[in-house]
Image 1 (tube, rainbow, N blue to C red):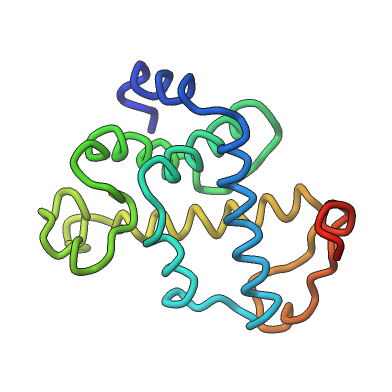
Image 2: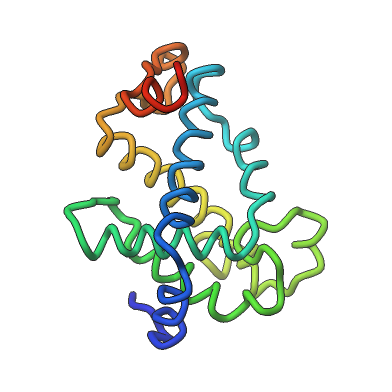
Length: 173
């Protein structure tokens, strides 16, 4: 899959500044790691509450940051390249109509047509939300690996998060 509207995507990249891209990715990684360190394995229904708080600009920053890493480095997200492109195309199509077109709250999503949410699994292989969830979990795992943080999404990871050099220097941990 590729990005359908290259011009729109390039415009989004030009509008995006590097700091918000990095912040969006690191905030997600920190949220995920803190949860696993405190509670163990992430169950689908727990951490996704965070995704409901994101707005389209947050999602665009995450997707642009992810796409840049996939294009510019040896960053590897197995099976997620098509999802990134699909979600970027989805953002292009629906971001003007909805505040959070990737992970809306259920009562908001219930009012949307099926072609926006892909809720009908008989017609589609997965929903927009399931693509987002899969991508965000793979993204956090890859970022952890790149930062040499060994914290898989398992109950046995509870309490295993060691402070990084960055946290020790800048956060006084």
